[in-house]
Image (cartoon, rainbow, N blue to C red):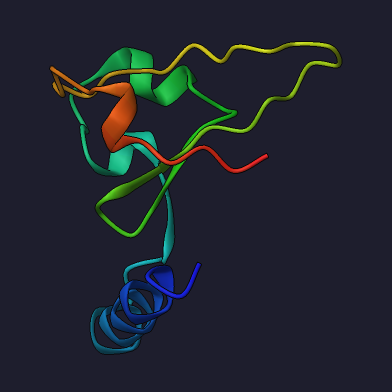
Length: 81
């Protein structure tokens, strides 16, 4: 978690300067993507962290909405449970 703190400080500084929200809907990153407007359980934390909580009891998987990202490897993801 300490690695996330400098990123959050930066995002709050950007929010202070520009008025952009820190927690952003997916369509913020892909305004032309109609499916991103329907992704209500996922959001962006800044411009680089996708938050996708498990919202159904007993579920052990989450379907991610891709905004043109390809090649996401499990080793490069952090899963907080």
